Amino acid sequence: MDPDPEVEEFATRVFDLARAGDTERLAAYVDAGVPVNLTNGRGDTLLMLAAYHGHAETVRALAGRGADAGRANDRGQTPLAGAVFKKEPEVVRALLEAGADPAAGVPSALDTARMFGHEEFLRWFLEGPPA
Image (cartoon, rainbow, N blue to C red; front, side, top):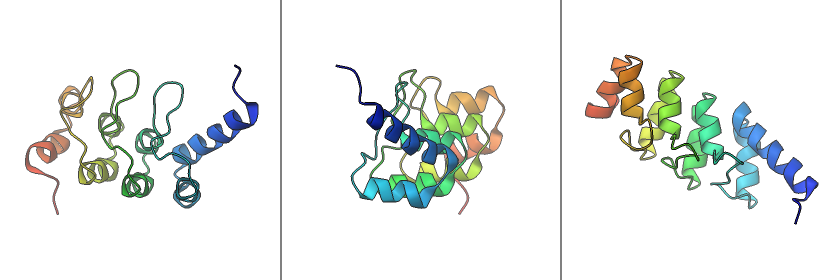
């Protein structure tokens, strides 16, 4: 059975909201019934896309609605590792607050921080982010 083009178009718009950090509209869709852990064809969740594109407020809104902050995509990458790779401290903080595990994923956020010499993130993972 072929996918419904209208459903595909709607899902694309929802994923674009996550990429753009349109927190209010995305949250409204989730509140109206869009699954908070909706994934695209690569296994990226709404939270993963928001994190990778640097939208801490959107990450917090999704996590507050039950999004899995540690859910890896089909390649084993986690939102936290993506945020470390993109050097997004507020997103890293939001994901840690949501319970993301720095040791999860391939490569993990810890490995990513080591690989790129992000000492600040390594300290956060070992000691916790500053208050």
